[in-house]
Length: 399
Ligand SMILES: Cc1cc2nc3c(=O)[nH]c(=O)nc-3n(C[C@H](O)[C@H](O)[C@H](O)COP(=O)(O)OP(=O)(O)OC[C@H]3O[C@@H](n4cnc5c(N)ncnc54)[C@H](O)[C@@H]3O)c2cc1C
Image (tube, rainbow, N blue to C red):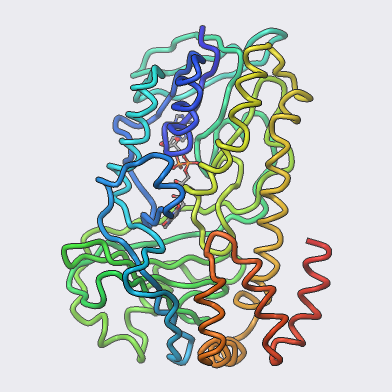
């Protein structure tokens, strides 16, 4: 009998387990794989506030000071400043392992090679059947939390709906690419990343992660591998990628849009399972950590008082509404500025971004964590964006 069972020992499950266990809540993490942090599907970007929460600086492979953003026709907009770290690139395996180790140090238990095969909510507890290394074990808990990623078993088992958007990310680890060690690159255009962008992220020791993400409806029947190939072989960039040697490639889902009701009697979901990744960058680690921070105090009180009915968890999860609203606003602006425009319009946006006064503004107000204020300032201040500003007004009003 545990007070809380968390399905999934990823970064968000591990972080939540740390916070619960360090407050004296008996917690079990159930992880289907034999090893934490494997297989991973991630570019490894962890923003400074998220890193400060876990202090796992030893997992940093590279600090990143800025981004060189390329338009479809090759106009380049540099955002950032040397010597001012904007984000960290981590070894995801060591990062996840570090987060889960902190949970265990705080007193949480971990079962590897284990997954739920049945869960039933009773009046006073949740009854679970866990398959652990081939053996079926019955356990009970007061509260079941799904931190089991984009295709969450918990979310599906309890029919909790689907995140608003499910993007696809594809990535290759490569060697043989040169460039500025502390700047990442982003590429746009229908050929290489319809509706979103592709990235090249330095990971130290002359290695890089080259990736691309997109919405399925924008792919028009193409595969993510074809988009990746289009980047590598693009007439404008093929020389840059000529000596690339692939070490590994992987593909995964990115759920963006917190589900409407991430809770039921004695059950809730969090992190990717709840659809917490950012529609503007696909980042899910920082948002998942923020979600944990936002609920932890009230969640522990609810567990201690045994108030874990749907209506109690609705109160605990109230902050998620603000996250959903933030995602909706960010998505609305992303759609207007990046996703809907064709390549020609995107190029004209880049020409505007590249003006010195606009670049100053972007560097001053640009915060990848909170892109809406910068988006709004651009729409207000740049005369050429006025037409978009009217559309944005409507979109944001109804977002
Ligand atoms: C190509 C790509 C690049 C990305 N790049 C970034 C990035 O740079 N920065 C960033 O912040 N985010 C990035 N993301 C998103 C990021 O990977 C996720 O948002 C993040 O991992 C979410 O953490 P989580 O703990 O909620 O879920 P996950 O990391 O998915 O962890 C879920 C855990 O649950 C386990 N699990 C699943 N089902 C079961 C089950 N039935 N039983 C037991 N265990 C189970 C899994 O094995 C896993 O360990 C990227 C995603 C993709 C696809």
